[in-house]
Image (cartoon, rainbow, N blue to C red; front, side, top):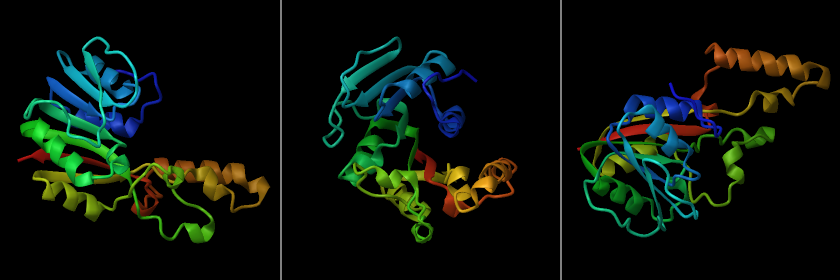
Length: 214
């Protein structure tokens, strides 16, 4: 697997590895293009179109377009085999329209992959803990497995797969213990998570998804 030098999420790279269909990929809310670059490095012959509000230049095999994602996307219908939408849908006021636009831009059988913040942390604030994304005031909403699945299916997608991932960092839970125990507790929790011994979907901070256009 090609490496990403810009702090890419391994969960997102796994999703891309499993689902990207070359050769025409649209990266919606592409940020600083780290995933766009990774796609061009990992898949031979792929051409990426990247959209965001930042002012930046196109790069080899990446056509960058500065655009307002609150408005209709100025690209032809059925132009892409894959659309990537990491951490963007939750920022858009009209979620139904952005999903409808993504569906329009995909060719039949095209694939959508992405991520959104998880909403299932209602029990955490009582312990003065919550998902880190709650501090991002640009988020318009959060999602559950059920609400995200309904949103995608209602827009005409099939084979929707939603997987919780990420989580509350181990050092947060270690804060509940006396200071002399925090380091070993943090290491123990981290090891348990890595071994799959501590795996509660309610503690997963993000939802990663794939779906196919009918």
